[in-house]
Structure formats: structure tokens, C-alpha cells
Amino acid sequence: MAELTHIAEKRRVTVTIDELLDKINQGDGFTIVGFDFPIFQQMLTLPKDWDIHDRIIAATASYYLNLITQLLSCNEGDEPQILQENQELVGKGLIEVMIAVAQQFEEGGD
Image 1: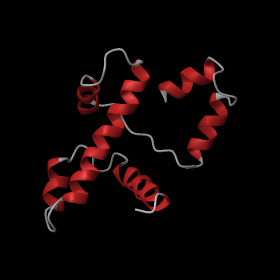
Image 2: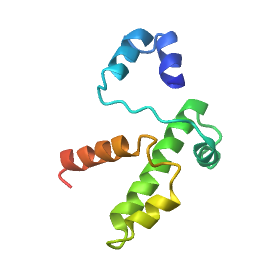
Image 3: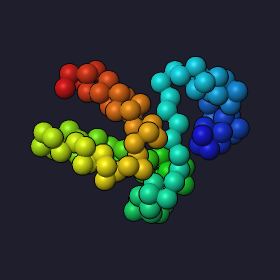
């Protein structure tokens, strides 16, 4: 949200922040997730010369994709334990992110 606000206010996109918020409220392919301590820790591992907003976005994506990768590659029956170990992500947009990843796989023919 901070990045969207920043680029809209700087007029780097042709839409206004109100138009972006309307799209988000309509559920038009957007998922809002919290910026919490684990994502902050992930952000600290990224290159320091990146823009702060880019580091936050990349850290969030990396954090979720790591869990999704674990779930896709685990032995059958290990999913509940993995989800239990990553409790902080369950219910914080995980399902929406998983759907988006599945759609990307489908569009890519995977």
C-alpha cells in the first residue's frame, strides 16, 4: 500500500490512489498482507541498495513463496506439520497467494 501510494502521489502511474483503492476493494486480483516482523527480517536479507518499498514487496513474496514451495515439494502427509510450523502465515492472505501462484502455473502451462 505504501508503494502504491508513493507512485500514485508522484504521478508515476496514470491512476489515482482512490482508483487503486477501489480496485483493491473490488477484489480485483489484489491481496493485502501485513508487514510483520518475519517479513521485516526477510527484508533485511535483500540488497541494501534496493528501494525500501521494493525490498518490502520482494521480502513478502519470498516469504510466502518459500512456504508454498515447501508445501508443493513435501512428502504426502507432511503438510499439516509445515502449516503448523508457519502458523504466522496461515490466515494472512496465504490462500489468496496460493491461488495466485496456481493461476501463474496454469497460465505458464505447468
